[in-house]
Amino acid sequence: MKKSDRITAPRLWLVIAKSYRVLSLLAERSIANTGLCLTDFAALEALLHKGPLTISEIQDKVRLASGSMTAAVDRLEKLGLVVRKSSPNDRRARIVELTAKGERLAASSFERHAKDLEALMSALSEKEMEQLHGSLKKLGLFAAEKLEEQQAKPKSR
Image (cartoon, rainbow, N blue to C red; front, side, top):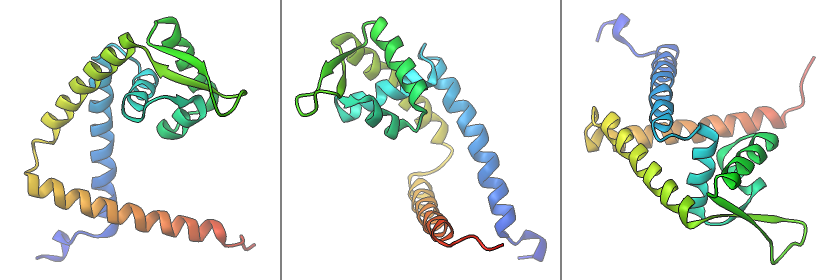
C-alpha cells in the first residue's frame, strides 16, 4: 500500500461525512415521497414501533425541539392520525396514540421508506453491512465516551 493510499483519520472522516450527507438527502427524499414531512413521519414511526407515548417521549426518540414536536402532533391530530388521551399515571401528562387511520398510514409509509433504504443499501453485501454496522457502532460508542469525558472535565483557561 502506497503512503498516499493509506486511510488516515481525516480521510475516513471525509468519506463518512460525504456518505452521510448524500444518504441523508436520499432518505429525506424517500420520506417526502410518502407524502409526509420529516417531523410527522418521525413521530408516526415512533408511535408505530414504540406504542403510545407522551409528547416529550416522542421528542426524545426523534430528537426534535419541544415546539416542533407539539406542532407535529397538532397537525397529526387534525388529520385524524393520532389522538391525545389522559395518562392513567399522571393527570398532567397527555399520551399520544395512533388512530386506526394513523396506524395504517404509518405502517405503509414506513414499509415504503424501508424498501427505499434496502434498495439503497443493496450496494453492500450482507457481510459488508454487518461489518460496517459493527465498525460504525464501535466508533460511535467510542466517540460518545470521549464526548462524555470532555464534558466532565472543567474547562481550562
